[in-house]
Image (cartoon, rainbow, N blue to C red):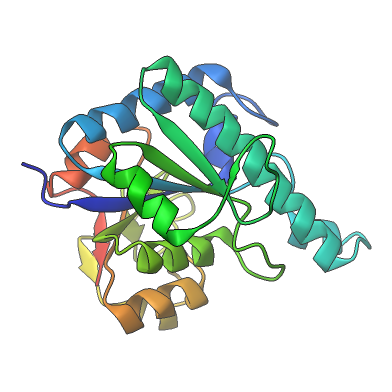
Length: 236
C-alpha cells in the first residue's frame, strides 16, 4: 500500500530537456512517463504541474525589454506544450491522462475545474495542470502549491537534479551536506535553500502540506517517494 493516497508531482521545464540544450527530449520524456506509471501502479493518485523553462522564461525575457506580463503568458503556453508531450508519453504507456489548462485552449486541453480534476484522479487518470495559475507574476511552484491545496493532495513531490536540499550549493561546494528534513520557516529564511519560491512554501506552511525534494533522475524514485521510503529532503 502507498503511504500517500494523492500526490502532486512538480516538474520544472528543464526536466524535459533530457540531453538537449533546448526544447523537449522525447526519449527522456518517455522514460519519465514510465516512472510515473510505476508510481500509479502502487495505487497512488497522481497530479502533475510542469514548468516551461526549457522553451521560454517570462522573467528572463523581461530583462531584454519584453513586457513581463506578455513574457509570462508566453511561458504559460510553453507549459501547455510540455504538458501535451507528457500526456502523449503517458498514453503510450497505456495510462489515461488529462491535461487541464488554466488558460482556455479547448482544442488541446480541458479547462481547469477543480471538481473535474478530482474526478479524473478518482478515475485512475493522471492529471496534468497546464498554463500555470493563468495569471502573470506567479511561478509554477506557486501553481503546484495552489493545485495541491485545491485538490487535497497529501504531499508535493518536487523533482530536481540533486538528491535533496543541501546546506549550500553542492555544485559549488564539495563539503555541502544533505539535509534529511527541514522546517518550512528555515526553507523560507535560509537564502542558501532555493528549491521553491517563498510564496509557494508559505502557502504549503499555512496549510500543512509537506514537500519532498528528491532526485528525479534515479530510477524508481517517484515510486519510492509515494511509498514513503526515505529519500530526498522533507520540508514540513
